[in-house]
Each structure stands twice: as C-alpha cells, then as structure tokens.
Amino acid sequence: MTTLIPDKNAIEQAPITGDVQMSWTIKALPHNTSIMDMGMIVLTLIGLTALLNGIYEIFYLELPLRQRSTFLSAHFGIVCLCMTLYFWTLVIRQKYIYHYVVTDKEIDVKYKTHFPKFAGTFFKWLSGIFIFTVFIFIIFNPSAAWLLAGPAGISIVSAIHLLNWENPTKSLRFTWDRPNLVITDRKRNLVAIQRRHNPEMRLEDNYLYIPVHLHKADIDKFLVLAKKFTRPSTDFEEGRDKN
Picture 1 (cartoon, rainbow, N blue to C red):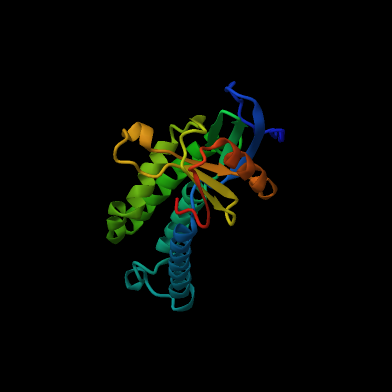
Picture 2 (cartoon, helix red, strand yellow):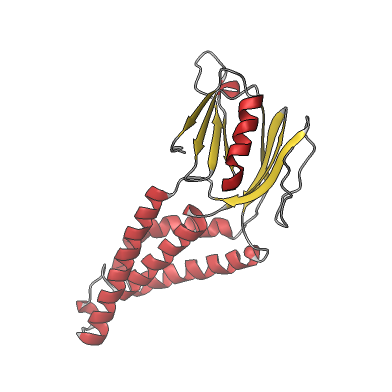
C-alpha cells in the first residue's frame, strides 16, 4: 500500500469505503491552457504596443491630446495590460488544490481554488480599484466607451463578482466499476478517467470525467491500481487529454 501524506494545504477528507491505497494533495491547472495562453500573449503584445506608442506620441512627438491615437494610446495600453494580467493570472491560469483518496472500491476527490489566506480582502480591493480605473479611463477618453461592450464590460462583471468572493470546497466521487476509458497525459502529469458515451444510458449515469493530477513519480503507481480495480474491458490509452 502506498500512502502519500497530504501537505499543510490538504483539504479535510471525509471517510470513504474500502481500503486506502493512495492519498495525496497536489496543486495543478484544471484545464489545458495552451490555446488561451497564446491569446493572452497576443493581447499583451497589443497592450505593450499601445503603451509604447502612447509614450512616443506624448514625450517624443509632443502631440496635443486631440491628435493622439485613441486605440494605440498609453491609456488604452495600460487598461489592456491590466485586463490581460487579470484574466491570465486569476482566470485562465488559476490553479486548484486537489486532494485524492484512492481505495479498492472508489476514488474521492475534493478540490478548491488555490488562493492565499488574504485573498478575500485583496480581491475586494483589487475589484474596486479595477472598476474605478476603467471608468476613469472612459471619462477621459469618451471615444473609447465602446470598450464597455467588449472586454472591459466583461472584466467589470467579473470584478463585481469578486466583491462577494468565496472559495468553497467541491467534491467528486466514483466507484471503479463506472469508467471504461483511462487516458494518461504524461506531459501534464494527468490521468483522465472517463466513460465513453452510451446513448442507451441516462445522462447522469453515462457521464464521467475525473481528472487525476499526480506527481510525476506516482503516475505508474496509480495506473497499476487503475488496471487492477477497473473492469477488464476498460481501455487504457496514452496521449494528450483534450479537456
């Protein structure tokens, strides 16, 4: 039996059935972010271009306000960079803390968003400052009000939600007789346990997707258990998980 002792960030685990084979706590990204990362890089480049062009127009060309660019302005560049940083760090690349307990009967997963203890107060202040900054930008640049219908508006809605921020713990549990497909994504240190769609089954019984994030050294240990406890007809594949 292999047991990994949870670290200080471990989530309190409720009792489950069966003999415990493995238990561990890990911090990981819940989804593949490679495509979104590329989008954020593009937005960062746009923001930097606008900021540098705005600085060039203000301090080198010394253009009056009416002759300066609206889109490629220093104000737009700052707002674009702030929004990109906000989404990239707090939404797209936001990690979760997962606590797994594997028995010979089932797997229990408890997870929550990874934030430091002061996150609640910090997010309230950050949201207030962000909303204030966006509206000040619109006041001084009325021609950029169209941003409220696009990314700025979306960001404001997200910021308002953060004013009432909570970090609840969620849980998932399944028995070993349910999955019929196990995909190992070694690049992400992930084993995805799932069911192939069966139109003859009810949706609540048919759907199953459990991402099992592991330390690299424990992937093969977990796969040995999965092959031992799942049904003989379960397919095991290696490759990139699309979720």
